[in-house]
Length: 266
Ligand SMILES: Cc1ncc(C[n+]2csc(CCOP(=O)(O)OP(=O)(O)O)c2C)c(N)n1
Ligand code: SF4
Image 1 (spheres, rainbow, N blue to C red):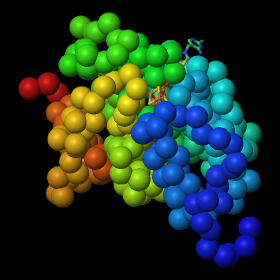
Image 2: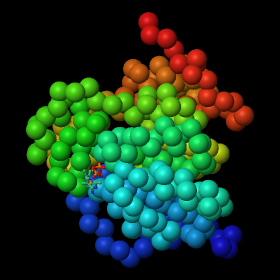
Image 3: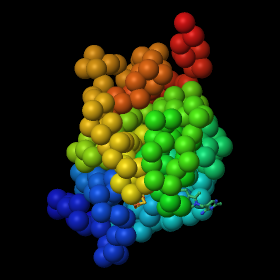
Image 4: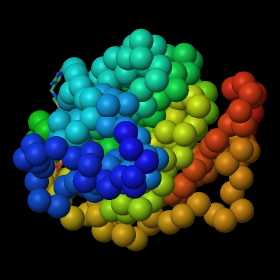
């Protein structure tokens, strides 16, 4: 690849995008290409590995290597790819159903192996592709969504789950803010180990308007004095603030995960 400045469009292909108008996944695709351009990555040095779902269509729209794999399985495939081709920048991605329902068993094991890859979850708190069933991150208040019967269970907290599993880099962003998403992706890709990004995203077709209203109202940046190298502060944010955006945790290089750093219950 030449040293010339890369444009995000260089990472897109001609494939027609079939997401619904207004779907958060369009913004995610744009942020991926922005981050790749900012990092001057050669197209042939990138591999995006997804599961199955609306969000998992993403690699099909990029001019990079990509694999739209099997529901819930992007992490083992991405891990194997990184082991076989360590020179590639590997990004695994998918939905909250893909990652935190059928795929959840893979997450702690991928984290234990700590491959140098980024796992980006587009969390619209619903199963989009299969028409609006509840996912493990569906909130109780999402009951009015079209096609969704309703849930009474406590939702899974993705950020707390990956922190407790020992992830070295954990960030949250939202699909409505492409600049922030691209910034989080750049940081995650540059982190030399397993990096997780929780992306709050909207399914305009099966969620009604309420989730977008909630994001507009509640999402905010992390406190300016948050120290991402402080594991206890990261756990505290994870437990208490589902709407804070930014780098929640970045373990200093060379430090091991220490389960004792998790704060004890008050
Ligand atoms: C093994 C297997 N089980 C179930 C399905 C059906 N299925 C396809 S996508 C999906 C869930 C999609 O939701 P999510 O992963 O959150 O992605 P979204 O469509 O919301 O982006 C399910 C259950 C499947 N394709 N394969
Ligand atoms: S069904 Fe929902 S998640 Fe799927 S493309 Fe449409 S808006 Fe996006």
